[in-house]
Length: 125
Image 1 (cartoon, helix red, strand yellow):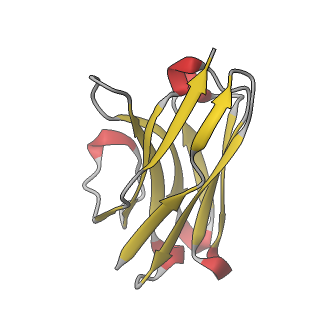
Image 2 (cartoon, rainbow, N blue to C red; image 1 turned 180 degrees about the vertical axis):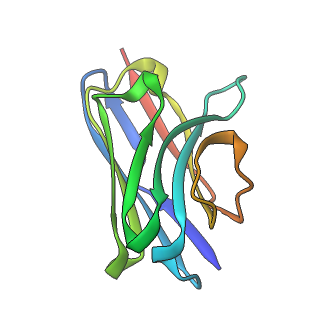
């Protein structure tokens, strides 16, 4: 099983990036997929999650700091989750990780089965 995060880069404040988390080897549609980030010298924090619910419906959970700016979406046919990040701020800088769990929950209450390797996002002022 693999989770491959990509799409990071360097942008100026106010810019946009789209991250991708591609998976292989798991029944993707049954997994909750979340994005976390870790800034230098700080703990890893929850950003957003696509939470699996019944009948293959998904809810979206966002950290307050990214609401209205970030959007998570998924394409189960491509086994990929996307994170569209708009109006980026310097405080969004960090390594972004995707993680997968079979639980219908997001955030740090959850035990994640798989983690991606991370992709760097740098936002300059």
